[in-house]
Amino acid sequence: MRPFLIARSPQRLRESNRAAGAIGHARAALAAIAGLAFATTAYAGAVCVPDDCLPPPDGVYAGQFHAQFPVLGMSLGDPVYSGFTNCDLPPPPIQGASTTHTFQSSVLVNLSIGNGQPQPVQAPAVVTVRTTFNRLDGATRIYDTEMLALDISGGSLPQGVRIRESPALASSGTTTLRSVGPGGGCIVASFFDVHVEMSADGGQTWEPAEGPPGRMMLVAPACPVPGFGGPGLLVLASLLIAGASLTITRRRA
Image (tube, rainbow, N blue to C red; front, side, top):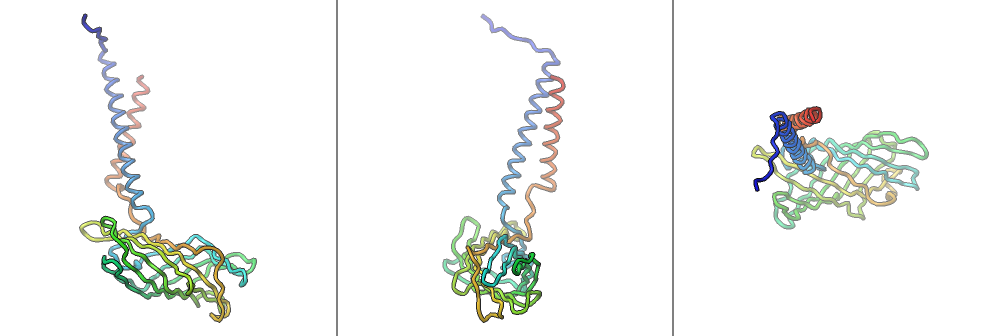
């Protein structure tokens, strides 16, 4: 017995082809979006700089924490470090290789005194950091870092107020570097967990902040997300074509 065949009209065939085309466009758009999301995730928490000199001259470290000093009746919040005066190349990728680097910067922080509202203050800071090579993860160099010294004073801080990194507790962190592209450039991720102390008598006595150390993360200059520009327009075009095709198909169904 011959199989029973159902003949389709030319109109039905055209509608079926349109539906198949719409599904193909939708799948292509979803694949492009997935690729863009993967690329964006790969750049999350990192900055892009011309080379691997640390800290990046145009870099910005920011913290989202509040350090409380109950004896002094003061607190610090949301510090931002920038304006690094000089940078230094990291140690070579040899186990245990280390460098120590001192530089100046500027700190902007919200300072609260007593029950008063937080007020932004800015002051110069001198920082010393040790960078030690840890290991390679593919093309990524991973370094152990420690803030050995931090001295913040002057500027618009109240008379006698100074801020420092604890000389007794290690303010450690991690920095990763990955060179990209034939023309150079680096993707950098970096943070420090800083134990902060404050003095109100010009450094004669110090009070450590309550609680855990505050995390400072490198947040700028931001990396451009791969996929935007020319390729990004292709993604947008795929979305528009898919949406239009599905709309037409539904109207004709």
